[in-house]
Every structure is written in structure tokens, then in C-alpha cells.
Image (tube, rainbow, N blue to C red; front, top):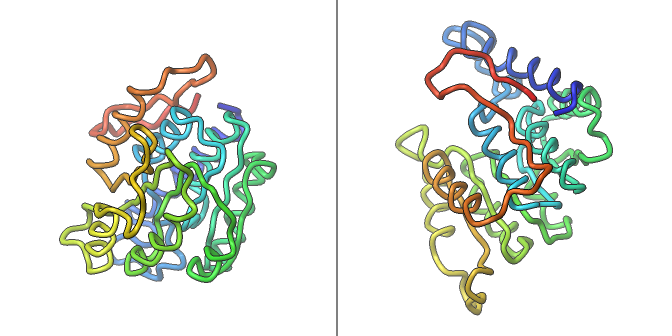
Length: 239
């Protein structure tokens, strides 16, 4: 991992921990969502990076870039693959921070930031995408799915965060899961091994990732980030 990327991720991790340990957004702190990172966390960041490398994804779409935590994790892998990542963010203040973090990491040539409501931006985007991360307003997950699935490459993957946590899920998450688990209306079955895939939050993502990684040979340049055990308080190692 390049030093600029590792340094940027380290700073973002410090910010994420501060919000969870008494900083903005912690108990008793400001609850303005526009000021919160709402980051996926280190384990999911590593998982996304691994999925992109293992599947050789070159066109990646992120719905909900926030302040850049998941964006940088994904872009590091996309850069290795020689691809591009498009991230959507609706909050102007977050877009400004996102641009700064992408520049700090030296990923301007890999990441395209699109400001605006994802429901309005998605119809204008041209696919196909090899991997899509959905991590924005939960009530809009069903609409995101309807807009994104037709743009997904054959053999591509949709990853959606916050499917199993917090619990119980709201109506948007429940409807999204129903759509993701049902056959596409009117669609012809894809040949074996060429179906589009939908991975869901937390445990289901991990299971899907294991299946994907096991089925694809590891390439010589696929150096994955190391990470301590999930219950460890140790800091991540950005290599």
C-alpha cells in the first residue's frame, strides 16, 4: 500500500474512532448526520478491498462516499487493478472533505466524485459496473437496487451495508433484501457461473466474499491489507 494511502486511512481511522469514543456523534454529542462519518469500519473496508482485488474489478461504483473512508479502501484496490471508481455523495460539506481525502491519498486519477442525490445521478451513469457498494439512505435501498442492477456487469457484485445491523431493519432494508433475493422479473437465466451476485451486510457479505475469493486464483500482485482480530483494540496495519 502506498504511503499516502496508508497515511490517509490512518487519519480517517482516528477520526472514526473519535466519533465513537466521545467525539462528534458519540453519546451526548451532536447528532447532525451531515457531520458524521458514518463509516463502514475497518473490517468492512478490508473486505471491500479484498473483494475488488479477488474479482479483478475495474469499474466500481459507490453510493454514499461520505468523508472517504470506504472510498479510499476501495480505490486502493481499484488502482492496483488499473480501474476507476465512481463515488456519489449528496452532502456538499462531505463532498469537499471527500475531494480533499482523495487528493491526499493521491487517487485523483482513479476516483471520480459525483455530487448530488443518488436517485437523480444513477439514471445518468453508464454501466456496466463490476462491483457496486450501496451505503446511503436505507429507505432508498430498494430504489438504488432497481437503478443499479441493470447496470451491473454479468458476473458483477452488489454489496449492501447495514443489512443485518442495526436490528430490527427498517422497511427499506426489508424491501431491498426481498428484491435482491428474488429472480429478476422477465430476465432470462444467465449461464452457470455467470450470474450477477448480490452480497448483503455483515455475515452474508463475509460468506459471499469467501465464496468469491476461493473460486478465483490469487494473482502475484494481490497483496491484501493485514488486520488484527475483530475483538482486538490494536490499530490496523496499512501495508
